[in-house]
Length: 185
Image 1 (cartoon, helix red, strand yellow):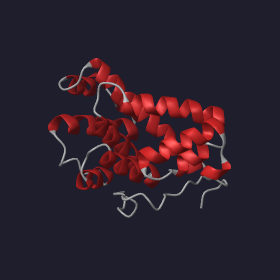
Image 2 (image 1 turned 60 degrees about the vertical axis):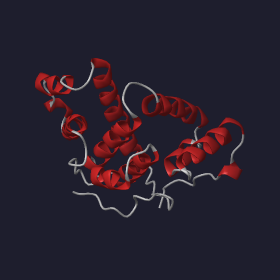
Image 3 (image 1 turned 90 degrees about the vertical axis):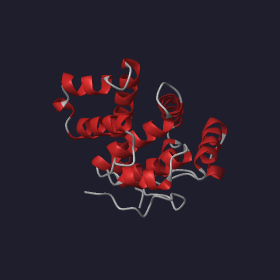
């Protein structure tokens, strides 16, 4: 059970309601993480701007960003975020099978280029201090420096989200089709 009393759409007005409706439209349901952000409107507005910038714009395809988000979250044993972003991977155009594979840290369905990014994300999540120039050089074989920065930003974002949902005890929503796929621990 979530530790906070999360608002429903009818509880909100103004910008909070606009963000709620936009998020609900994009996801097909309202994620509890977004409902929690609605309790702090300034943080909600900043998070909405940041999240859209990281996940919806930039050099890398959204499917890869969602796969990285899923990898970070599964590595951190954050079932909420791993399920949410495996689901988001499918919303972005990926297959259910590939989203589920990523949630269980099976990178075999992905291209060699994508696997390099996903293995990097997993290593950085386990121990960021273990990243070396050699790891970056492997990324450089497939990605520009700007794309490498985006990979790092997605990792950074989901390390924070994993903590946020854990601290607040947020639960998965019924609308999440990846909810019942167990994490590989």
